[in-house]
Image 1 (cartoon, rainbow, N blue to C red):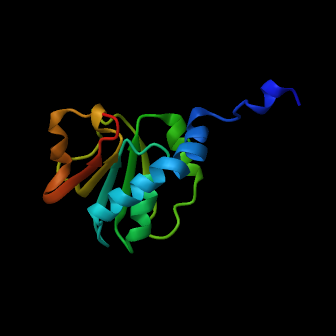
Image 2 (image 1 turned 60 degrees about the horizontal axis):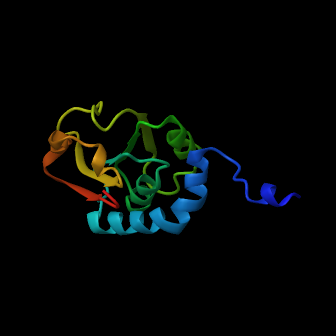
Length: 142
């Protein structure tokens, strides 16, 4: 094998993100985010800018029942998310849409999670959470 060939990455950007960044960085942050948010069984949870679904899967593992929705604008990231097992807990619904124009009614969720997606939102984002619900997010480098 030529030396240059051994350093070539195989796969799409989304596959590489899942293979390298998720285990090294974002899975740790996702676990912390979900621990702090503490989703409860029976709640409706939205993971905005879900990418390959690491936060949604982490939330599903914590919940016995309920609904989890992952939303992302990137087709490739969602393809990877859909290809991965969701593990225990509620089945995850994946939606392709922009965080700027989410296809959900106001007050549709008890909890909205977002890891590394704050920079994609307008200020009216709070309308998707019911009155006694809350947003829990990480800003990362934003």
